[in-house]
Length: 275
Image 1: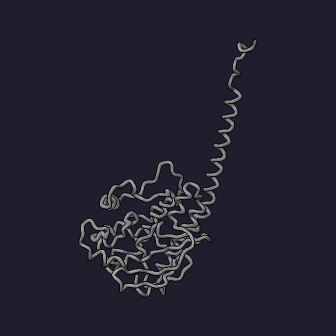
Image 2 (image 1 turned 30 degrees about the vertical axis):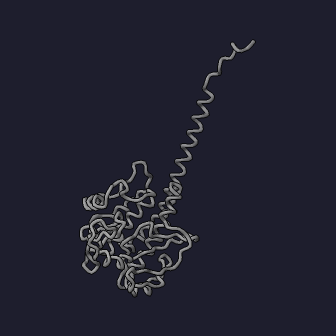
Image 3 (image 1 turned 120 degrees about the horizontal axis):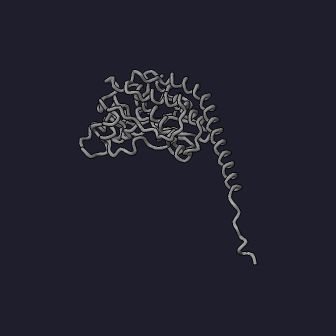
């Protein structure tokens, strides 16, 4: 994040930066206060109660915010897009936060030579939460944006993981033990697993997988994602209605079965108990 960033980001779906200090040993940013909660907490509390139109509405606002950041001159890359860095206000407005902070931390992390330090100096181009990081960033773990390896497409990859996160309501790659194993898994083409019993809108799944495509050139832009999201909202409403009707039918069939079973049971022979 450059010192001019705060003057370039004013958008409904962006947390406004009020000021920043780069002169201290520990750089810090002052941002607007968001009266609400992070999306990570929101989806974990909601769990299976999140319906498809709501999921798409959340992601539409995220995509709108990211499209704005990428449209600035020069573009602002987030580089750490995940549900923990997204906030939802009391009025249900989603705001993208913590964008570009890696610009402040990367020089400090690069200077660290401790092997077991939390700075992860040898992965200075990657955020500490590496499970949302694109494979091309892993392939060049100490590069800068000026090197040409870290582009807008890296944020699109992270958005694809966020789409998965909003469906599964958990962190990606939790089953993998170490940072090194996650990096190797992603570089070899691995992506977060979709549970076999997960009910996913087909068009949503297609978009998610295109966002985390191995080749950055094959990923859509956020401008394209915004268009797709608006189309998805109509499909999500229809899909949610079909899920509701299917559940209603299952409940009705179960009630009929229970009723039949109860009426078909033979009466107990109690004649021996009579005097």
